[in-house]
Amino acid sequence: MLRKKKNTTEPENEIKKELIIGKWRTDAQPGNDSTFKDYRYEFSKEGNIIRSLNDSAMADSSFYAWNNESNLEWKKNATDTTGVLYKVIQLTADSLQLVSKDSVTILFTRLK
Image (cartoon, rainbow, N blue to C red):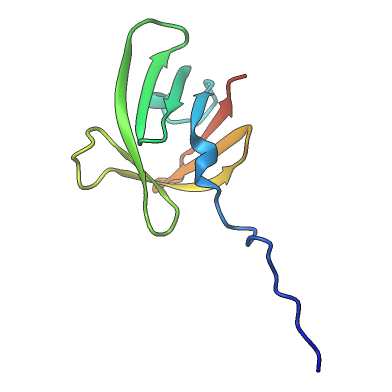
């Protein structure tokens, strides 16, 4: 009798959602969504996003949630039932790449 070894590795397209937690930055890039330029973002485990311009003391907040397809939904308020949907192209320990429905790519780099 032959036994087939169970594949215990995760699928390549599986997103490790916990990697989003932490501090990130975006840089001005040609064709980038201008609302994301030159900001610092802090994603929390609870779904909060704190955004500040570079190292400014002034900040604003928004919220995120994951949908069933592992897409990121960016919301203005925690109680919003819908938000702006972004497809997660890449999420690693050092980078996060999102694409909007308008095909705008936003690249985040983790702050060290």
